[in-house]
Amino acid sequence: MAMAAGEPSLNLQVFNILIMVISLYIFCIKLHIPIKFFFFFFDDGDEFRPPGLNRCGKSCRLRWTNYLRPDIKRGKFTPEEEQTILNLHSVLGNKWSTIATHLPGRTDNEIKNFWNTHLKKKLIQMGFDPMTHRPRTDIFSSIPHLIALANLKELMEHNSWEKQAVRLQNEAAAQMAKFQYLQYLLQPPSSMSPAAFSNNNIISPSNVNIPNDFDTFDLLNSLSKDSTLPLLMEPSSINNIPSSFMNTSNNNSTTTIQPSIHDSIPFSHLPDLESCLISKDNMVQTSNFSVLCSTQGENSPTSPWRLPTSDDLSPATSSPPPAIPPVTNTGGDDCSASSYEGGPSSPSSIWPELLLDDPLFHELA
DNA sequence: AAACACCACAACCGCTCTGTC
DNA sequence: AGACAGAGCGGTTGTGGTGTT
Image 1 (cartoon, rainbow, N blue to C red):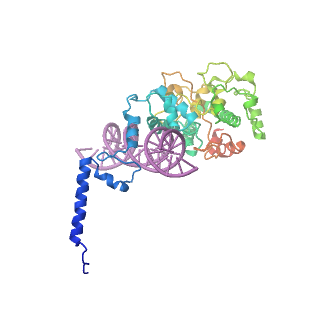
Image 2: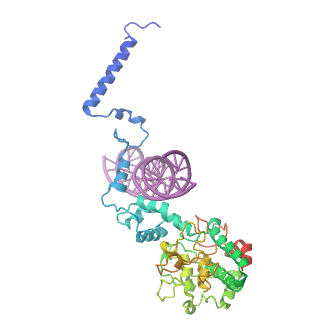
Image 3: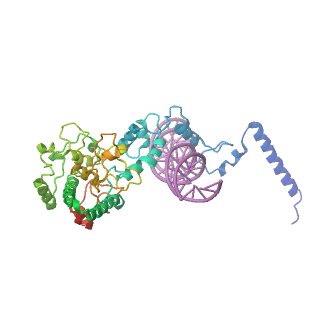
């Protein structure tokens, strides 16, 4: 490995490179240029980050908009804000920035976090799908209902002295199931359309899906014979709907049927969260049965199978009883947790097979 | 007191949109 | 028209605090 004549020695080359590096270093120090600047091509970020601070301009902007901005409101969300978020989310979905424009002082990030950590869980706990704001129909949401059924069954077995009252309640349960099935069938197909968000939806033949199968007609006939339930299709009878079926907070006499219409309004069927949310350890949530018991006048405080009512949940408030989440099928594909289609493809095949065939249901009905 | 689980929230990430050159 | 930078947005993660065992 003889070195060619006139070619600088290896030591000299290294020395020259060293001199260049030192010169560059001094140059950078004099001009206050960070050395890191020359290694920007190794930076994995898409923006240049100033030395010393591991922050890019983007994160600084986020820090300002989400935290440092002086007009940001601190503290917990008020119930009004909570309700606003719920209402807006039912209409807008996860458009956090749009929702934030309606809540001065709150950032989209804050609202998003609040939703993910609080409101979503609340809705799930209440048995509502946080995406559709409608009663969930998956098996997990049905578990509290089934537990309530099981408890009721057990109580029935051990409390023969109240068989008569239980029988009445079972009849009411069957009627309620029929009613909810009918209500389900009568849902407008475009229940998720913006027009459906209006709280002034009035039931009328024009906005009601006339059922087209015989099962439904049979059900209608059976209901019309039943004095317990009103004739829904006759406007004159709408005012006769028992108050428990109606949103009692609506004092307007414009014949607005809350249960069925509520079911078509993504959020309006929800009661005030504070008034109906039950503590975590209470397995019996706002279920059909809590409403059912209260509607039949059999829900005496001493009754052994008494389930919580809205009064139990919030004695101080006079808010209406929670809406009736339809008795849910277990695993039906009409309204999955994340993809509600707004209407059943074959309504008559959903309830009877999956829910009404439930042995517990048969025993009770 | 320590370990662990859970919760709340700021921060980050990746993507899309928009304005500028 | 296309490239680029910055802003905006929604989903996700990291982390510190708190409660529980």
